[in-house]
Image 1 (cartoon, each protein chain N blue to C red):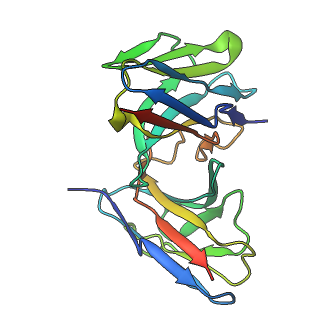
Image 2 (image 1 turned 90 degrees about the vertical axis):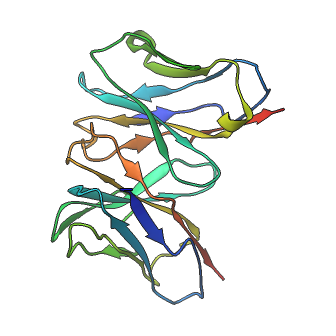
Length: 114
Length: 116
């Protein structure tokens, strides 16, 4: 079955460490997204990519980095510069670059900073 | 400014009750899209409906129905005869040109708890 796989599901990090969250899709979608979800808040866009080797900052990109070397993969690195990284991270994809397209989401990765 | 407001943070109902989740949006665009997503405890958001700004017909899908009213900038979601499996967080979202069509703007979500 086609879908989005995020790993790990749970991740613990010490302050000052970088961590990378994996997102892989086998839907042949062009566009991929990373969102952050905090309790009581909606999803906020971190980065998005509409095509391989290209990506744009979202609303809260500071302290994060991404790469898009392959169509099916869009890993997110949470760097030590991110002041409050504890959150639930969701990866999504869609077949087109328009916001009118329906997003398919992964099951998320929960990052906790100790 | 593009904004989505879901004023109800949490709603608790007993099974078989009807429940309405409110969504109010702001945009200066005349063409835009509205969405509802469901987030069950597993965490993955599931698409429920997409509506464009030119289609004000209400939609019904089984126990779910949506009331889109441009005059009040609202896109409310009603679950009829709620069931325990409806327990989840529900998000309303907006996509519009001036907000960047690629970027969905989400409301804060409404957590629905349906008790047996």
